[in-house]
Image (tube, rainbow, N blue to C red):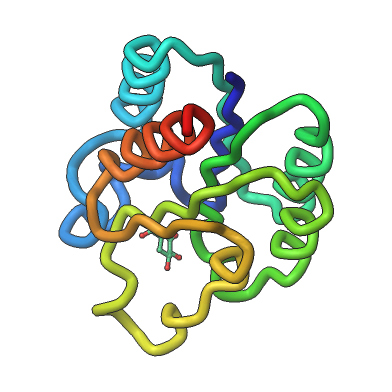
Amino acid sequence: MKILVLNGPNINMLGIREPAIYGSNSYNKLLELLEETAASLGIEYTHLQSNCEGALVDAIQQAYGKYDGIVINPAAYTHTSVAILDALKAVSIPAVEVHISDVDSREPFRQISYAGMYCEKTIKGQGINGYAMAMEYLVNRCAT
Ligand code: DQA
């Protein structure tokens, strides 16, 4: 099984960026967690972080026929990007949306998620562990 993990703008600033909201784990710590989780689940994965909407759309398109699942934290593009929603719909790969913070308890503009209109599951407010939970979900979904 192959999973594509996508992170949107400013996720590379984890640990530095608003630690009261996003926690103290660094971006490198997130990369370590992805590595450990993929190894323990026995799956392959690729990770991409980009601050550019088009790069995320390109990565989703290029996943077609190559990946069995997508874990995506579109970050700020969650709340604005119809292009990311349309790309997910276009490739029709099972996807899970992850948010490090609990977006439900934040500003009103964070209450809409375009990617979430496609994703079959959303994990929020679990810190970086949400990515491990999303990977596990996709593996279990494939096994059943
Ligand atoms: C985020 C929540 C978004 O509202 C925000 O713009 C982010 C990160 C999260 O992981 O909690 O950049 O997606």
